[in-house]
Length: 526
Image 1 (cartoon, one colour):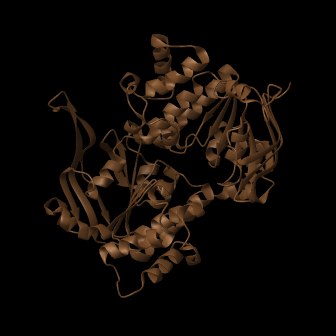
Image 2 (tube, rainbow, N blue to C red):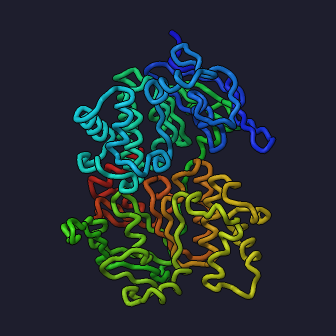
Image 3 (tube, helix red, strand yellow):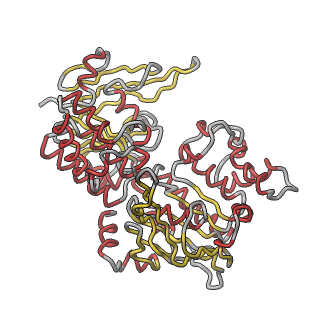
């Protein structure tokens, strides 16, 4: 039986400014009906480029050679009409970053209906019924209320679910999923993996799954292709690869998992931040006079605290209130209830007075590429806060930048480069350096490792623990990756729909969870 999708001796190079860069070097693999093949490797290994090459989605700067056949028909060199028929209908894609893949000007219903009208001729009520069916399948709550929503009105996890619904709309023969669960909560991740497995089984769909998460590979893949530097260095049945990896790089990937635990918090450690009955409700306005008709209850009355040298992990699904709570503690959004920072009730502080505290409260965001200005050099990004807050003015800024770059594992010689000239892990280190150069007391880490390769995740976790030990930092660590949370946290807060449902020592929570919801999260994390 011939393969549904067969790639033979695929080579891809890019021409830019007279230079040629080889991204894929002689890759061969096949995907059969009802089979899941995982392409595994770190950023820059050629996984996504190989997948995009299958239906010519790389653009004019790419030179693609070799052979890609779908049901026997050659796709490399095929005309645009043939490719249009295959794309989105026979071969469908789920991309990693849904915000750049969804149209910000169109509602969710319009974007899902567009594909149904183009490939199946479904319009009106028939299209709406199919859209609702798809949204239910991918775990969107109250789908009827989401039809008129725009992408920016959904959480990151909800946007990814919409992308997956869009990819599944036309019941493709082959689904190419490029890191589709990176931004998802562990419970939704488990649902999506189960959904994809069911579709593969029920409809004989072939699945090409691109990921850096070997935990997912073990759960979903039939065969694995491990990629490094544009080549497949090892391939085989999943159970064989995990039980007896032959290549040193495969062994390195399998060993890359955050482990260990943070140093104990000294009994004499001072409290850095505390909340008492913190509440964040956003009013819902309707009508000509914009009357308040209800509230979005983002965070219900909650009381937590974090001490010097301590990490408080905050976990929960998208929309549970994790980030909202952290932003309220930093006084970046309005809230009710007490927020106490180093003994001061911040409710009494004016906006001007709060500016003096900003250097003591810093934040590191999930997506370093979006958080770093593309027009500023690494040195300018890191040093920006020094001049604003007048920190250590008796020393040259570049000297301070070089010092903090070495602390976070970056070469100071690269300080005049721009963000696009660094890898994802290096960009995250720049974001951490920007926060650490001010010597803050409290750092909010909002999903700082979720978009990183497993080997880089381990490095960042080790770096954050080292910096905490060195400077007595208090961390609020927001994540849906429970392995990382366990490696980082002294205590953990579990949030669900705005409520704190469990709060306690990390060891107790992971070993003896008290609520069904926490047990569900832990089970989904594997």
